[in-house]
Image 1 (cartoon, rainbow, N blue to C red):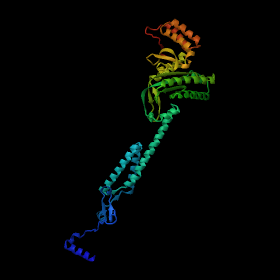
Image 2 (image 1 turned 45 degrees about the vertical axis):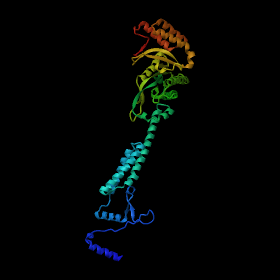
Image 3 (image 1 turned 90 degrees about the vertical axis):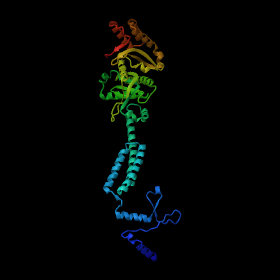
Image 4 (image 1 turned 180 degrees about the horizontal axis):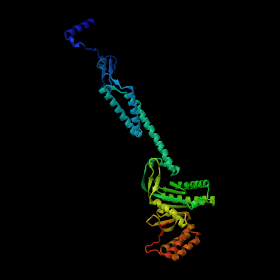
Length: 449
């Protein structure tokens, strides 16, 4: 061994020993002998998964020595700056991911992890600055993803609760649960669609209410609305407003209902009958005679509120017409008036009596109006007076006022205190004194009432 060392020294002197002056030489081997698969004095590199290369130990030592000699070792950022970067990254990821649904958030997480790894590797290669990218991948990114999932889940739950609370004020509880699958209802905006509209009001309510103590009035109104709302909710209505003693409700919104006309008429009759029973229970304390108007037509339906205040409404000529029909009951002495449009296709299900043609306040067109008498079962019991009134109305519309007057008085003999007959008798008297123009086709002007 000594002989071999001296020979090497002599050989070096003889062949340019000065070449090694002020140099450091590392001598090592690259043995791979041993058991199958053993790598003696070899170490796996960082990119072994790509290159498959193992590095000899002497090469590792040489690299470490050069890094020390040239001062090219990796440096870490100051601890405060490193913590600030981690915190800033967590805030950015947390704020950004809560705005994403879980599936897009997964894509962002994977893309962000790859981007962070590439950035930290590039900075380490070019500037010799080491950043704890594994900490980033293990803490801020998963935490931001978890926060995104939790936040969106909580937000979805809150929105569903808010939507349920909003809808419960308008529709029945079962229908509200069905509509919870449509959070888009909370968005501000409206669409045009056909609806069946109901307006109801208590006759002479202001005068009667003035005779009651406030506590009694509240108790009676509470009972009244409990009965009334139960009737219309039974037919899956959407109540848009309770205006004092009035009810404003629609069918076919927000959920489509192919039979919305029939639902509106069934609910109207149930409402009329149940409120009549309520009136009988209270006697003369608070007459609960309710006037109802029903019309079917197009309206703008949707959330007319703001992002913070939900205000589901139906607005348009159709809603105004239903309100006018409700008010017309006061002049005709009826309880339920419906338009021809609301009865389309329902002739076999309900018994009606034509009330004639009216030009109502705020409307240029003439409206054909009917009284909703009841279900088909009452047809036989009401046939006589209905046919008599229809005949009298026929004479009235053809300017035969003498025969029309006699016919309307005959109807009163069949049905005591028949309000529509009394109304038309007043019209007959007025038209006798002031004959209509040649263009008159039997319509009644109500434009100033």
